[in-house]
Image 1 (cartoon, protein in one colour):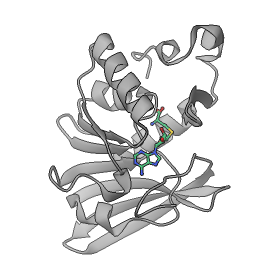
Image 2 (cartoon, rainbow, N blue to C red; image 1 turned 180 degrees about the horizontal axis):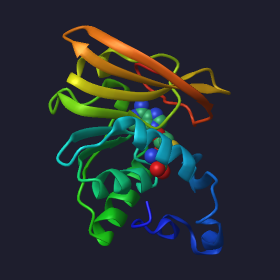
Image 3 (cartoon, rainbow, N blue to C red; image 1 turned 90 degrees about the horizontal axis):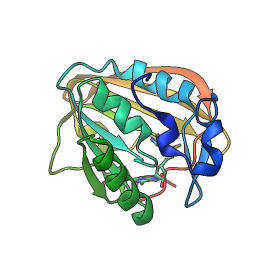
Length: 183
Ligand code: SAH
């Protein structure tokens, strides 16, 4: 996290906020996640060098950069076109290489599945089966699940073709995951 300059993700007027442990608006009604939350989700994913990771909710691209720094191959989906385009250009300028998609992440990316890890960075009403199906055996899905106000950080480890070990840890508040298998 020390390698990724978080102030690059802020408008000039708000740069002094970049190294506080807070979420912050990034436009289009969305937020860059709080550093603590980024660290928490990243730790649960237990990223190994070369892991193929699907991230849902590109947003500012900050979390994407953290995954890339850990050696992951990142496929990231954003449903809002403005954010998708802005972040794709920004990360390119910074020298970060991810694969960017503008689509409904609640459906995952069936054409590129399976993934070692799947990370959802928006609050979901339930765990979409579509995403569970796109996980490799031994893979990990991290997703905050709850109502609009509070979500429980949930991780599912895929232990077999259709078996999962579920762990829940801590309450968080994300912007909503919107889409076919979401709100
Ligand atoms: N990881 C981001 C957090 C962004 S907030 C960061 O570090 O900045 C969550 C993002 O999820 C928002 O940009 C929102 O537009 C996006 N989102 C919500 N529902 C989505 C969906 N179904 N598919 C893809 N992106 C979605």
